Image (cartoon, rainbow, N blue to C red; front, side, top):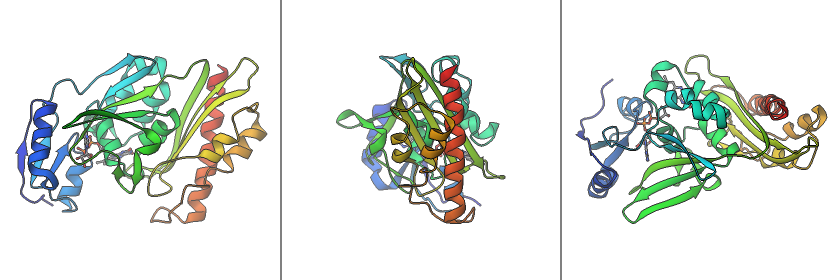
Length: 289
Ligand SMILES: Cc1cc2nc3c(=O)[nH]c(=O)nc-3n(C[C@H](O)[C@H](O)[C@H](O)COP(=O)(O)OP(=O)(O)OC[C@H]3O[C@@H](n4cnc5c(N)ncnc54)[C@H](O)[C@@H]3O)c2cc1C
C-alpha cells in the first residue's frame, strides 16, 4: 500500500512548523516517529496534503529534572524514555512502560509526544501518564499553555492539542516519600498493543498508610481513563491484600468498556480488574522498598 501524494516539509524550528500549520491548516499533519501516522496514510485512513516533519527541529528531544517534575521533550523516543538513567532512578514506571511498547523498531522511532498526541485507545503510555498526573505543554501562535492530564484525552484518538498547536513537552511530577509505581498489560500477541493495561502509583506514609494514589486504565474503552473509584478505595488506608482487591474490583467502573475483536465487555472488564490488582500489588511492594 502506498500513501496518497503529499508535499514534505522539514521545518528547522517550532516557529517555522507553526507557520506551516497555520498556512496549510486541515491539509497538514505533523510527523513525529511516523509509526502511527504512516501506517494510517498507507491505508488511506489519513491523506494529508502536507506533511510537517518535526525531526529536524532541535531542542524537542530531552529528559531533564525541572522544578519537582521530569520534563520530557515531545520528540523523545520510546527507547530514550526506556533507557534514561534519570527516569530509572526517579520515575522508573515511565521507563518500564516505554520498554513494553511494540518492538525495538517501534521504540527507536516512535516518540512519547506522538503517542500521547495520537491517543490510540490501546497505547501504553497514556495509562502511566494518567496515574502519575502529568501535564502537557502545547505551543501555538499565541505562545505556550499547559493542559492537565485529566483534560487531555477527549475521545477516540482525540486530545486537547489544537489544530494550530504542537505538543512540545510532557511534565511528569515527582511524587515525594515512599512511592512505588507499576504498569502491566495484557498484550495483543501480534502488535504488543494493550488489550488492557493498568498503571498504578502509590505513596505510603511511615505507618504504611496510603497518602496518594493514581491509577490509569488503557485499552478497555475508546480512550485511557483515570480509575477514580479504585483510587478512592486506596487513599487513607493500609494497603493490605484485602484493601487492594476491593479497590481493584472497581477498575472497570467509569471506563465505558467497549467490545472489540480482542474481547467482549465482560472479558475486558475482567482484565481491567485483574491488571489493576496486579499493578497495585507491584506498586505497593515497590513503595514499601
Ligand atoms: C507494529 C507497531 C506496534 C506498535 N505497538 C505499540 C504498543 O505496543 N504500544 C503502544 O503504545 N504503541 C504501539 N505502537 C505505536 C507507537 O507507539 C507509535 O510510536 C506512537 O503511537 C506514535 O508515535 P509517533 O512518534 O510514531 O507519531 P506519528 O505516527 O508520527 O504521529 C502520530 C499522530 O500524532 C501527531 N503528532 C505527533 N507528534 C506531535 C506533536 N508533537 N504535537 C502534536 N501532534 C503530534 C501526528 O500528527 C499524528 O496525527 C506500535 C506501532 C507499530 C507500527
